[in-house]
Length: 403
Image 1 (spheres, rainbow, N blue to C red):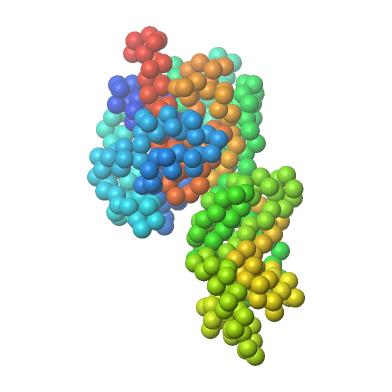
Image 2 (cartoon, helix red, strand yellow):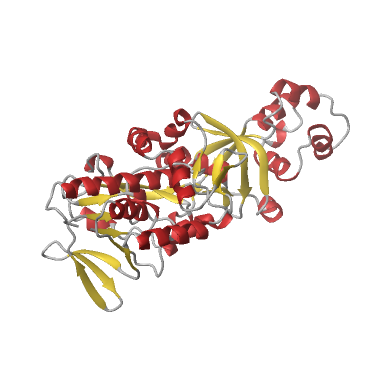
């Protein structure tokens, strides 16, 4: 059997199939495997999350029914146990996220590749998949050569279209559309947004974090932090709300992100304190009375109408619900992940294309998305597990020993 794409989903499927006794070849057009996983792990590899499944599963939005089944087969605890089997111990961080103790992706990848090699998995780098020939065999471009491979089963795990320098460039879309497969347009996910800053705010605060604020959009509220950039905003709390904000911009051309600059203080208490202001300047009073300084104070002046700054009630309302207008989405090439892909109804429960038996799909190629925090990687690992098992099952109904 052939697996095209050496990311988490592809490598997990390779392990499952090889452990079942199948001959497995993995093809990837990059010089080395797991490029995106290695890049994601530079700041500490967030493998999964420790929250209960009743809170974990809704992170997958419309794809929750699929992931309810997938995580039943490979849960966050199963992922931790799998990593431990590679010699990679994990821990739960203060945010509930789960990381390797060594905080490195490279150590995990090296151990995983050693396991796969021991199982007989062969890895073919610098092989770019180009489709099928007239006989249905897979075709690859390898340097100046065209290579053909005719497996009995194939898994495509080619990623979406974010971070294309790691290999996920979406080049597979026209190839599958050519089969009649319905593919939702690939769009950025877990990305930053554009904000038309004043020159003053951009020059003074680009690159600075805005910490301990509340953010809300589309009826969802959370507490976290983000970073002011030259073009807008980005960061973990923004990524968590990126899907509804992106969809609003696509529909209306703009979206509103509401900030609570002092989430631990009630609005009534704010009004009481603001009414005590005397002859002090607003900046001095906000600093002394509310500890509202730096980028948070700058954001207040950026978006609150000047006439409201001297009205305690109006000013408190803006501090607790500052409307920031987002005018654009950062490009998919700069996004953490992508949404869109092959529509889920195209697949059976084994993740095999119903219109092309023997062709399986997994990972970010499919039409699902999840916020950062371990949900993306957990989803990809679980999909690889399910696809690997699906291939073993399907091949078991074919000629004995086929691969």
